Image: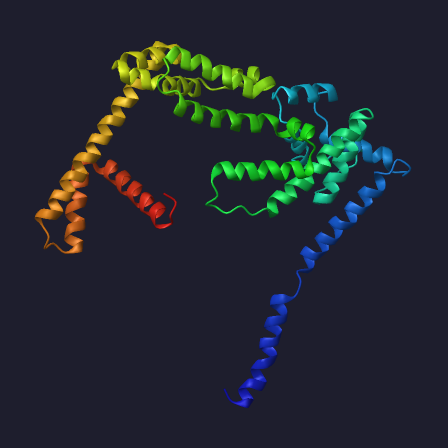
Length: 352
């Protein structure tokens, strides 16, 4: 490039660079307005402020729901695992950014920043619950925000074993919460994890035990682990999970006795009724038939490859497509090919 061309092009290059990096005035203005709005909210949250009652009214319209739990109800239901205390508090955040006024003459709360949302939620909690309960719940909310921010920045390697991963998370929680508060907030979740681990260990150590005794002992162990959460856990546990657990605990004895089919049918009728058991049997038969079709196709495809080593890649691909269509039908062949491509993607990316 000669000097004259350089002289003429430099101004345009400079303008292009300036345009690319120049701040978006509209975006910057919006961000500035959100910041000012948060500052005004913080000032209005002061009870001595002349805007305090208006501020309280806005927040009440924004966050209130019918039949809200009292503080004691929240604590009791959290203790029993019937609600997640954090989910209840975090649900309030989903209402930030909505309009707070619905009737003529009421003030409207426009979309707000993260900071303003927290200010308004704290004000709502302080007004909704009497002292000192309100300060307790506000402190839990503040601490959880700090904990969540720390968890976003916590890096746990992907290859970390699940037990070690869960242990790390539990330790991190105790850095922010007392044991009592951690139990109140995360207790049910952690107890469920402990129960799953206990089932794995119990199955490994009790395979010689008679099935009835094995089931009784496991559920006794689980009840001890879940403690106050046990009743609610039993109420909400899906029938299929209960069925799978009993099947697992009976499986060793069923294999020893050789009557798996009869006992499996009895358990299905116990959890799903006679009609449900029939539907499960039908689905299983369909799965078996599909598996047999796949095995026949793959065996035929391998035999064809061995018998025709001289075919070009395009010819081989065309012949295998015809074999697939003959084995699965037109749509079934397409579905099989999509499934194989997906599995290959998983293997290539070390996801399987």
